[in-house]
Length: 206
Image 1 (cartoon, helix red, strand yellow):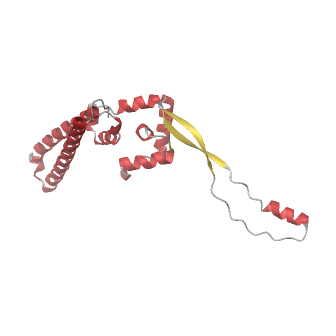
Image 2 (spheres, rainbow, N blue to C red):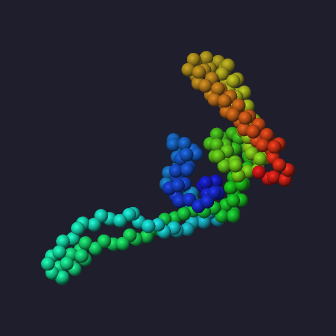
Image 3 (cartoon, rainbow, N blue to C red):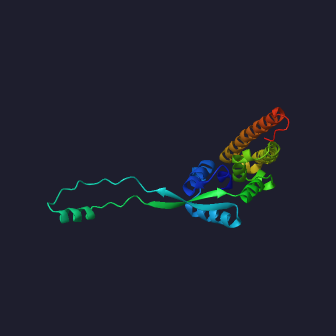
């Protein structure tokens, strides 16, 4: 939530849509978990909630009115067909606070859980543009070390007696290939970060 609000206020529906884009359709955030999380962030002082007024839907179609032949009858008919003017309703918007900015940077920091948990790493990577280049490199290096260790363990497991079943062996090989692919991808990201850091003008901070 804090990462999504970093660039500006958003409404609940926008937050839900963006969460689904980041986490994927199979692990999207429901409104039942979104709004309690936002309330917790507000109580912690990391976000502010305010009401925005918005115009209701567009004009309603009006049926033609025919004269009744008398002033009183026409007035009565007009009252019956009176259309209420579009009202205004409120909807909540959410914005990150200065404290929330500090919390966001703390959440993006590197730790053991970051490297080992695929979902946590993916979330941190989605918002690591808010970190300094050196912090991004540290995040990627921690992930690389975890992937290398994971691949080594998996390769040992593929040669174990229990892996003689062709389907189990095929599954392990598939996982190894996926890990190798991610490892190469992380290496590319690290190289890109180091190149950008080398090319950065002296005194620049990002």
